[in-house]
Image (tube, rainbow, N blue to C red; front, side, top):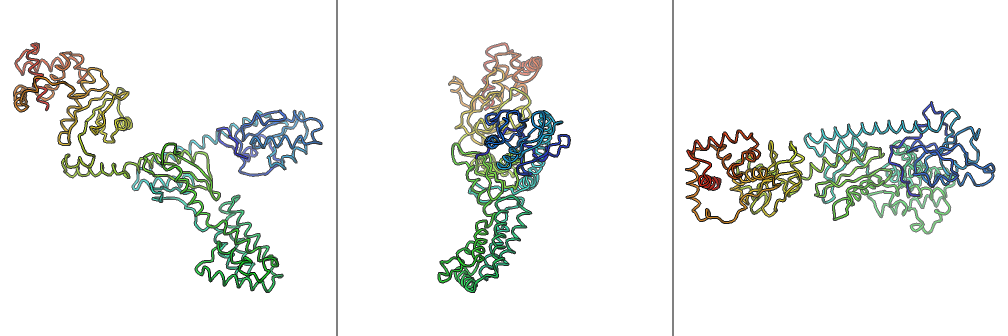
Length: 619
């Protein structure tokens, strides 16, 4: 039967509800499994509650729906089977006012279908039980949130330590009580932390000892090996397939031990023959994989030991069981690696996470968001609430730690930065970033202030990771073949395409384009978007010399104010907005410009000449 779609609530252990002395609940039927959990309490007096259950509930009933002759038919079997089919976790039967005792047929039905049956005393109301379940859920939720919060803090602290990748893996393994591994793009384990799955489990060791003992005709040692595996596994992983396999080894060994007295001479001969055959086939190992073959009638057809000696059959069974459970750690490692391959990016529709179970171990894999093929794998003996959230936080941190520095472009950018810091010229390191011209983009957020996350988002939207966050503006270096587009919530200024040698000039152009965009309330303004003019007929050298001579009396702030004021047709308010100053400051600066230049700025010819000089002086 598939797992029911239980409600999204924290599970509450049934044992915790039974421990509430104020309720006085008592389990009178069904398995007393400490791992049984409930997800809610629901009251129903319907003869068939199936349509009203989601799964995982503690169903409460006072037996109003039970007919008088129910005990003589199949009513209770049908009733309990429907609860189990709906995924109900347990049944609570209330005493009084309808029934003084729990019907015996109901008890038997719950035992048959392995449904926990609780007796609810008369003084305990169903609403009281539901409230207790809610209280336990609230406590579980609070504990889960506290655990997740503490894990987030510890993981963030680990990410800031030396060797942050391994530090995060160690902290994650500690928090989930298992093993955490980082798989590289090719699927190899690049780093891991925590208790790794053991490649030789207790039943694997028992397989080797059982094989040797069987070949030598010593069934007592087979039983001893099985008992050792059984005891070790019971301590480490009770109620698992591994534990059951170890128990079967011990049982098979004991069966062989009890029939030793009846062992036929030919049995010993067959054991020696098996020993000889095993040594000839694989002298370097006595693995359980080969053990079943050494005891088959195929290798000793002249004997009837397999039919006549129960102990030999039991020994072979012990070795087969051990072989089947060989190396649970290898099974877990292989299953987790396979799960990592499932989530590794391979095209549209690839899942970002996946879970599975192998050898009683819970597995999970998370694709790291950098897109480089790294995968986080997690293996834990238990899956507690909050584990997924904790592992997701670790996956985000590992994405940040691996994505930038493991990619080729990230390494090139790091190399370019190091070379610049060591004195290289920009044009010498530009090829590391890419060929061709570049654009400088200045961005100002409409909502202040700007933070690193918003700056990185702008860079991602423009298609470049080369982002610089200044006090009130974000600068982005973008390849010229990527045409910047207006971005919601941003005002942008874009320079003309420039080589690495001209990046400083392009930075100035982008700043002025941003000022122009602010003044005109445009989402984006590009520098140099004009058609051919008469000034293009002049020699650039002569034009720049004239501009320098004419503007020599002005300081850079005054020249910038004059340029902005002229570009905005002498508007005081718009110039103040573009320069982020008061309008009276603009008036004072323009008056100072007129005094230093000794001219009348209201004269259109003067304005034209100054605009010409300012345009050529900025080149």
